[in-house]
Length: 447
Image (cartoon, rainbow, N blue to C red; front, side, top):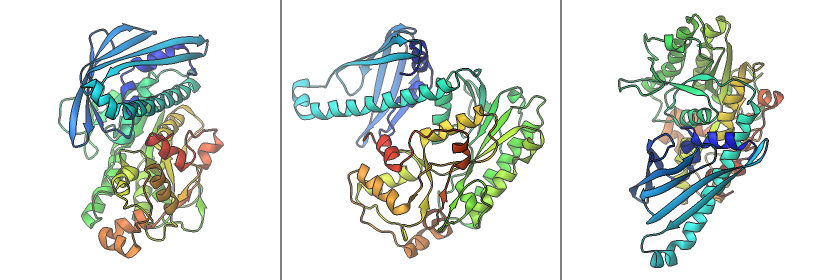
């Protein structure tokens, strides 16, 4: 690992580590995650086929900076002891060693039938965990000279928000989650109201705000009422947040706001970058209004980054999560002509780009958060089919898309653009997953 033993251990002892270590191809819910100390517990709910199994592990032999042990007291194994050891290799290098002893129920019989698969699954899981740990540590090490920050995040319950909050806490930052609703507030949670008055004074003097909240644009056909909800959730919610922050006596230094590559409209014949003007269509109108709503904080003199995000590659959500089941049943293939551009970014590269936007003070304005290698829709489908070991033969003709999904299908499925991350590359950002094959292999444990 590219950091000292103490930093490696601190990463594992942070509350966000367990979220970062769960493989995305597994359906696992974290029910309880107590701070690491002797006798504390972690409770997970694993989905195995149609049922959920609770896995309860107690932490033992915890020695800060050196090691700890997880011992299963309930779960799918009759015996499971996992020792995490952190070994010094030099001033800026360490070794992570995972040692696991396990036994299956009815071990002699189950090992005969399942032993090989269990060993392959464990090897797959630890390859993923070690790659992600190493990548996260390297990202944090780049900014080790910077102070630890207090960062407020909206949309923290979404796939991107959860990953970002976990990633930031493993870097030692404090995360304040801006939440809606009336449920009791948890630690470091602040109530906010995107549609009305709220008290923003708890944001006084913090370092940064990351605004991710917004209505899901792919949920249901776009009736006029639905389009109004989508527009207001972004434009009015962002304006409300920006105005509240702008009124603070000591506002944050930077605000990073999610936007989308839909800003460019349908661009079938050219590559676009941050200098390209706004395109046509509902999504282009929404993203323009979304970005314009940031004017109050810009007028206040804050640095503002408009993060125009492409399709986020994540096995459990978004486009890839929605396509996973159809592809597993052999129903994946070309949509429309298949030639429409798909500008995408791996989830880990996206949260790294958000970190980059917070830390790099020369970065402001529109920033395309996309891989430098966009693909045609048919190539995206073929790459996903290869990773899932399925055919890519089932077309979805354009007339059927329009019939089933209306305007939403036209703009989301039949339109596209090839977007270039000119600003990120010019500022020295490095992508961990530049190709769609690399991104999908990592997400499904095929690396």
